[in-house]
Length: 325
Image (cartoon, rainbow, N blue to C red; front, top):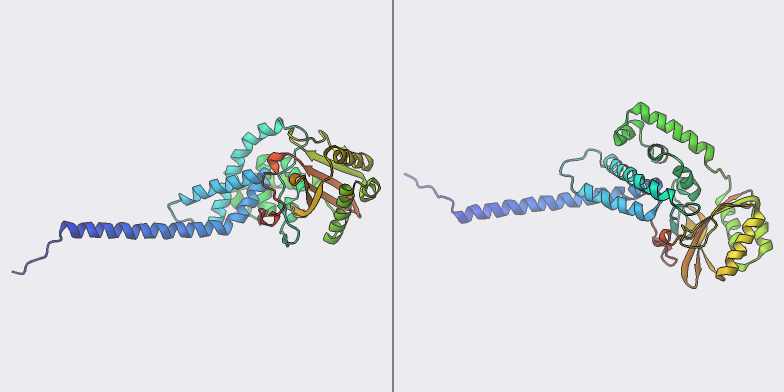
C-alpha cells in the first residue's frame, strides 16, 4: 500500500501566507489602477466643483472627498468618468446648502475665488468663457440644480440621460431645468467680441495707469458706462455696492491708491482672461480681472477678501489650478 504525504501545519500556514500576499498584491494593483483612473479625471472634477462653488479651496476639498469615496469602491465601475462626475456633483450640491446661508450674510458684493496663472504659461484654456468671473457670477444666480444641469450639459457635454441619473431626476425634468438655465444664462452672460490681443493691450494700458496714478490715462481707457465690483468680504476695505461710471470708478481707484500706497501689478491670467495680481509691500493685496469691449474697459472685478487669496502666489502663478475641461 502506497503511503500518502500528509500536509503539515507548516505547509498550511505557508499556503495561507502566500494567499494573503497574492491578495495584497492584487489589492495594491487595484489601488494603483484606481489612482491612475482618478488622476485621468481630476482636472475635469475640479472644473465641475469650481464652477458649482466658485471657490478654489472648496473645489479642491471636494475633489479630495471624491477620491476618498472612489478609493473605497470595491466593485468594477463600467464608466468611471460618469461615476466620478456624479460623485463630485452631489458633493457640491450638499455643500451649496450650507453655503447659501453664509452667502446671505456676506458683506458687500460677492465674487468667486480667482484662478490665477502666469500669462506666459497659461496657453489655451478650453472653455475659458465658462470659467470667467463674470460667468461664475451669472451661474451663482441659478438654483443649485439648474447650475448643476447647465455645467454638466453646456460646459462638459453630458447627455440628459446621464445627468438625470446623476441628480436622481427624470430625463424630462432635467430637460426642463436645462432649458430654463440656458435661457437664464443667455439673458445675463456678457458677450464681448474682442480679440485676445486687444484685451491684453487695453488691460495693460489700464493697469499701467492705475499703478502710475495717471487719472487722465485711466479715464481714457474706461468706457463711460464701466462698472466696478470689489469684494473685501468685510475683512478688507472695499466698496459695498457696485461703482458705475468712468469718473466714479477712476476716482475710487485713485482713492484706494492714495490710502494704501503704491502697488505693483503682476500681469496674470485670471480665470482665462487678462488681469493682474496686485501686491503691496510684497504681499498679495488683490486680484483684478477686466472685461474689454470696443477698445475700452467695461467691467472691473477686484477680489480683496484675504480668504479668497490664500492660494494666490505671484512667483508660483504658473502652478495654480486649472479650470478643468
